[in-house]
Amino acid sequence: MGWQKLRVAGASAVALLMMAGCAAAGNESPAADQPLRVVGQFELHSLDPSTAGGFFTRMQVVETLVDADVKGVLQPGLAEKWDVSPDGLSWGFTLRPGALFHDGTAVTADAAAASLNIAQGKAGTPLATVPVKGITAAGDSVRVDLTEPYAPLPAVMAHTSTQILAPSSYGADRSVTKVVGSGPYQVKHIEQPAHIDVVAFEQWQGKKPAISEVTYQAVGRSESRALMAESAQSDVTFGMDPTSLQRIKQAGKLDIAAVTLPRSILLKVNAGHETLGDVKVRRALSLALDRESMATALLRDREMAATQLFPPSLPEWHQDSAKALAHDPSEARKLLAEAGWTPGSDGILERNGKKFSVTLRTFPDRPELPILATAIQAKLKELGIALDVKVGNSSEIPAGHKDGSLELALFSRNYALVPDALVTLAEDFAPAGSDFGAMGWNDPALTSALATLASGKEADKSVENRQIVTDILQTQLPVIPVAWYRQSAVVSPRVEGLVLDPLERSWRLSDLTWAK
Image 1 (tube, helix red, strand yellow):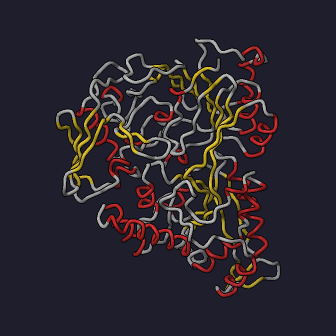
Image 2 (image 1 turned 90 degrees about the horizontal axis):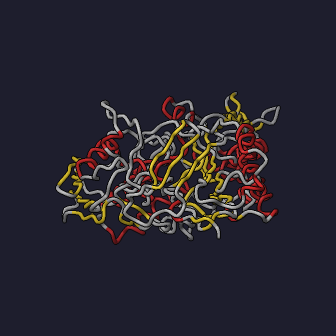
Image 3 (image 1 turned 45 degrees about the vertical axis):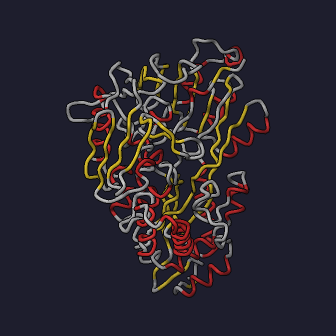
């Protein structure tokens, strides 16, 4: 889900640099007719809200019924308010009066219900996991009836896959043929997969954007994105590798915006694998990781060494009392020996005549992943584990999950793409697992705790149930935390007002202004 389903951009940075020419130095003074230039690492391969990776909520083209602030507190979106019946089985979302789609048509409850019904039918989206009985229009409200209570429903309505599109966005087969939203910006031009132009929507009800036009360009190589930022060919640049980011910081000519995300870099483990299914082996893999050194040397940020799955930016789930994940190669070797693994003549561990050799899959969309994979490979080699690292496309991870071929995968997971982390956790650690969650593993106590939290019952036991979940994940390690995540963006002196959204829902472009 989210950005992990997007393939790294293949646009030629050389061509972009040639287009921009060498006149960057003369381009420092902003003009009213200039677009804001945003550069990032991801391509757009689909207009469908379930697979577009949140591009159009990030660019504020579309709205969801519910919004969230930078602290994850739910706010009105297209719905100005919502309520739930006493039995928890019926929710009403009252639409903001006077809202218009970009084609000039009114935002109606019928249109919103139609978008949500399409979203609910898309497998793998948060709404598809909700026990929905029906989604209908009721006057100026959208009514959602459930088969059982589901307390996080308003948070689900803030997920990008639930964006509300105009009827004119859909073809006869209900596929999305164009993006007609209701946000402060509207689509001017899309050149898939690497270019999007948006302009301010004149009939937007809220505060008008100070910058009237924005262009997004996908650039695949981190070094090329850094060069574009340094040569004033980009105003806001995402997806910097740690080395480039440190160089730009030291130069002191560009601003760096940063925020700690509720995102963790982790190793997904096939717990149904004949070797990795042994919890002693998973604990040994965890003990092999020198997280502090990797965070310091590779991420250039020691504080991002993960001591547990949930970072402090998820205060309801982060447990100060949890025993920190540690680096202890001696204990790792002891556990592997207990699991029956002994060194072979070449130093590689063997058991019953079979070598301990596994494959890790990752992808370069987030530039820190391949270098972390190499560091993990080196640490496991010290234990006698042969790790083959394959850097490919992010889609290979869910594909490997589905066909059972996946052994290990390295990726980052944002646990608050739905503002309530419970929704993502219930998906990732469901009994059947999920593409970017558990594989071949489940725990009845964890399942029960998550179900109780989702029902909204026993609210007085919420802290206790969250503790149960985090304790089980910390000891069973169906996914192995590696590092937490700090999002950074390089910002041109031409621009003021950028505040990064830790939920990664929006780039908040409408808040930006040209520097005076």
